[in-house]
Image 1 (cartoon, helix red, strand yellow):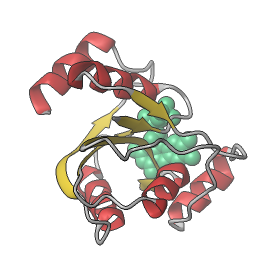
Image 2: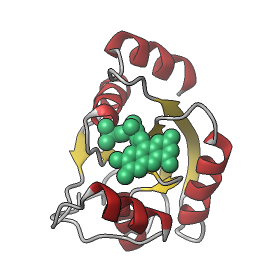
Image 3: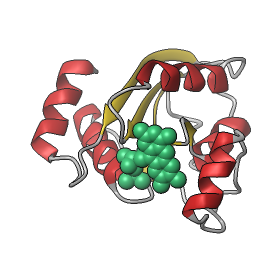
Length: 149
Ligand SMILES: Cc1cc2nc3c(=O)[nH]c(=O)nc-3n(C[C@H](O)[C@H](O)[C@H](O)COP(=O)(O)O)c2cc1C
């Protein structure tokens, strides 16, 4: 199952393509209360989680693909919440982050691995995609994902 949070649609596009490629479903995490940009950035920076409207049932899912934008160099509060409340024992967890900048990717990856440590997951891939201003072109996304996953 692909589990994603997306504010402006870029991660959603990547998540949907990844779900198609893996032949699995996609679940969108939604916040109980939407965060403004500035508050969201500060919460992300402080590694805070934010309450979700609903969480997916992952009991029968051996493979999980978590997709989130990078906010202030960190995962989003929505994805942090999902990770905090979930026991990943027996599951393989892969991560796809989208961001604006071409640099910082290794740091973003380390942040994800830190959030997942001690949660029982076997780690699959961790990818960071810099998203173009106009959004991802689906064809390019598909090519990247086919090549990298
Ligand atoms: C609050 C906020 C903070 C962000 N911080 C970063 C950042 O630190 N580094 C970066 O490269 N991009 C940053 N971005 C850009 C997003 O990561 C990027 O546009 C992402 O692809 C958006 O995904 P979405 O369309 O699924 O919401 C930030 C965007 C927002 C809204």
